[in-house]
Length: 216
Image (cartoon, rainbow, N blue to C red; front, side, top):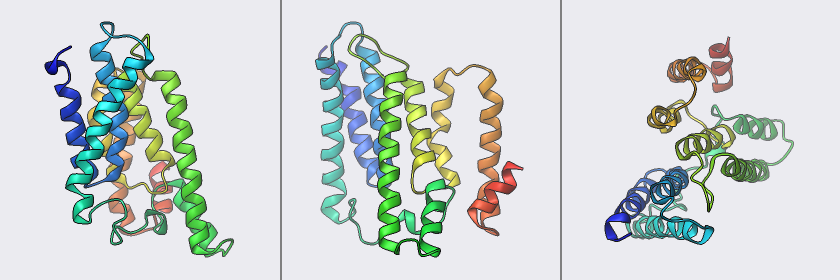
């Protein structure tokens, strides 16, 4: 595979690095880039070592692009004006846990936020590992790259310390390529309708009550 075979990975790395300057969660799409990049090379390439190379190249380009375009201008991960997503109650179940711990004074604000953030991170990491085993690429197979990417982003949304209705837009373009069975189409339609209603409801009532109304 010459340069033409790697341009997609390099370009994807650049785009991910730029996207992370706006929202660091864009890094989650990197797992999909690796899965799709491996699918494009298999079976000409096989083996865990070559799979690792397929992962390292876009990963390195993503990090370099992010640092060059964001961190150098003070817009990196430690931007003091970015706020803490756990501080605000959102549609994420973990944000409800954090709110309960804070306002019932089970823990102080910093301890409650740190605890919930740590548990959320561990849960997302475990989910990614399990989904990689189920759908992800291996040295001798491509797995199901589109379903893997969709599942990883869904798990990240569900297990993150913050979730807003418009996060569903991360999943919208992927669903069309995932090739899910027809029985999922109705579920998907209901989810799209529900998340479309939430922003308007949340202007009037708390997120957890808005989700309860939509669920009913």
